[in-house]
Amino acid sequence: MISSDEKATIEAVAAVASAASAIIALAIAVWVFIEQNRLQRQQLRQDLFDKRFAVYAAVETFMMSIIQSDTIINMNDHRKFLYAIEPAEFLFGADVAAYLREIREFIAVLSERQQAEITQNSCGEDALPLSTARTTIIETMALYERRNQVFRPYLLIHDE
Image 1 (tube, rainbow, N blue to C red):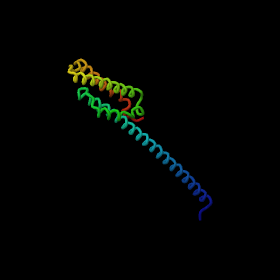
Image 2 (image 1 turned 90 degrees about the vertical axis):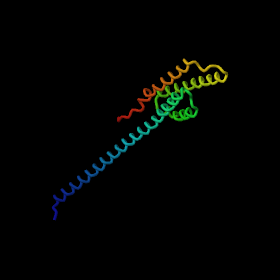
Image 3 (image 1 turned 135 degrees about the horizontal axis):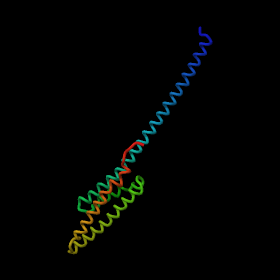
Image 4 (image 1 turned 45 degrees about the vertical axis):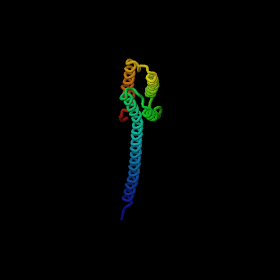
């Protein structure tokens, strides 16, 4: 037979064990919550990186297509570029938005130069002066080379 002191000790141990298991269960639940939260933040950062990198890659691809084609704008490439950079205002700061605006303005100027050259050639006039073509290539390369500097802060992967 169990004495009343032994019974009280067993009940006290059972109460402590019950409280300890509740605390352990709570600690595990908190740990799971923290880990899920960390993983979700990591996934959001990865998703944001993927979207930002797609815009960066679109700039890279489009600018390279202009450079490789002697600054001739392919309208299909231009359309793809405009479509790809459309979400940029929601993904980047004002610096990238200004850079993309600069590219769009440059493309407009480049298109005007192309139209002028087409008009001159169709009228039997000489092509645009070599200095204009050289300036266009230099401007295109300058825009192209700035892309890493502009996008770098948004494409660095690091833990907080």
